Amino acid sequence: MTDAIEDLRTTADELARRVAGAVLLPGDEGYAEECATYNPAVPNNPAVVVGAAGPSDVQAALAYAKDHDLAVAVMNTGHTTVVAAGRTLLITTRRMDEVTIDPDARRARVGAGVRWQQVVDAAAEHGLAPLNGSSPLVGVVGYTLGGGLSATMGRKHGWASDHVTALDIVTADGQLRHADADVEPELFWAVRGSKSNLGVVTAMEFELFPVTRLTGGVLIFPGDQAGAVLRAYAALTAQAPDELTTSIAFMRLPDVPVFPEPLRGTFTVHVRVSFLGAAADADTLLAPLRAAAPIMIDTVGDMPYTDFAAIYSDPEGPAPFAERTLSLPPLTDDLVARLIAAIGPAADVPANIIELRHLGGALRDTPDGAGAAGLRTAEFVLWVVTVGGPDLTGPALRWTGELFDGLKPWALEGKHLNFIGQEDLAEEAVRAAYPAAVYGRLARAKAVYDPANVFHLNHNIRPAAAVA
Image 1: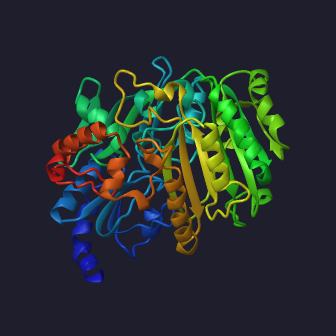
Image 2: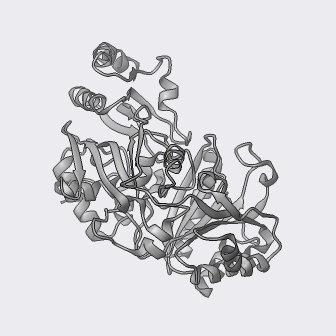
């Protein structure tokens, strides 16, 4: 690749004079940092990386990639799988980090590089809150284009992508387009569910909600009580009001610094709780769960919305990991029994985190103007994560495949796009992530806005003509 890089260096210098951000090649100071991902198991080694400072930089980068026959990838934080290597131009968006709050309209406008904690803090100054995820470090745009499953208010208000009111996107032809319900409506629908397949979103506007506090936290149980806790959790979710958004995670954590010291090297069960209501009402809902087994840690209580990250305590630093996901129905007795047998204390489980996130509520709805993303018939998202290098993730992924095979009688159509790992990027796997009608419509939109499949380094949706 060295000769190819040298061939690009002179023209890359010309590109650098056209953009306000950074243009870096392998070996340049800052190249490794610019390409770094949250998941080092998916390293990026592009021929050129452009740290875009605005839409015009994105346009210049796309023109350069076309002139030099380079594939194109897009990245903000690197939480979602992006594989950029060889003759690839990587566009990073983190410099576009402006946040504007319109308190009267209850809306936020963000640049492509903004992360959730920035929005939460800015909105809180006006008594408002967004439909953010569990981590403060996740990029707003990528999360939302994958549907956006809010860990705090999802069941009350639905998918974050359905609350987007407008976006700006540079499509494969280099045009900067504005899309909303009235302008480019098909593009507006398709982008909210195709992630980076149709272009580079440079800005997004979305609704906020008048929330300043919630009742949130985590209940942690010993792993040998997993069966009792899961059965109690199944009963809780069967009757849960929409104000209650929860998940349950079976955590077999390795003894590595990325995890809290008291939990390293242990098997525990975590129930994460977010309730839009008084702590006393939450206590009533959670009483049967608290009585199901001894509790090691109980942090559920009233908190300012800005402290949302304390509910999940997601790792702040990068760590290599592999992930897979499946959609499931309500936790019936037979499904609970299957799960306990497969992932409970008697099972030999190489995966570190097996989590069930509760859907339902407003997440079932398809409001007017809804986007292409969202699991609207499933009741749970199952997410399996293993931390470490190939020596650990390889066996764990094979085990996960066996787990999913055993769950086929309950598995439902579709997958949560933000939990799709690199093992599920093959064409048929991507097709299976969507209802057939949705995938077909997305493929037709792809044929209009990216007929040459410029944006294919992702969970790729091929243009309709190519599919045919």
